[in-house]
Length: 207
Image 1: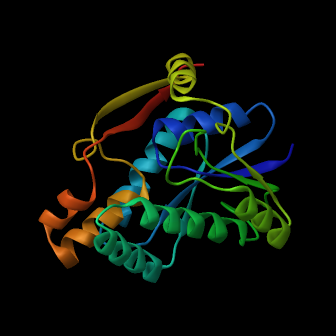
Image 2: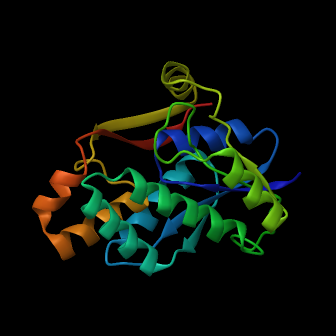
Image 3: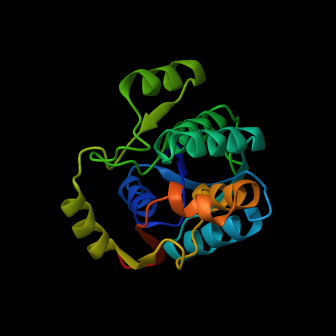
């Protein structure tokens, strides 16, 4: 069975993507971290959620300079969209450029980006370039699903807790970006740049 390296944040979307790929691929989850001060908690959260869903989790270290560039861009823009896009593409490039994850070679990379996402949103030119340059397939299992359908699938397949982004610890690199922004620009800037939103964390896989 081919192996797919799947970006994993411990949240609903990336866990659902992994569950949908599971019948067809040997799924290896990738916890991406910039290895900043908050890195250990990000990796720990992702690993715990991965174990609860039955998938192994490998740690992939990203380039810390990309985090700083993304934070500076978010502060200059006044919103996180382009910075998050930059980091997500960097994470895909980093994973796709590796020979293995968790000691296993892989045939494809995947993420949990959805049909209606504004950011990150992986377009066709980037996807094709990623595949051609790295000799792998790029998969978006949720690309054809709207929010209602995703919520319905997640309800059937996953036990998920949700809450304000500040209250739900995740394995997402957004956690590290927020903390880096707070350290370099102050907590007030984080509140100005990042809108309040509901965050999810997977507790278990139910099917």
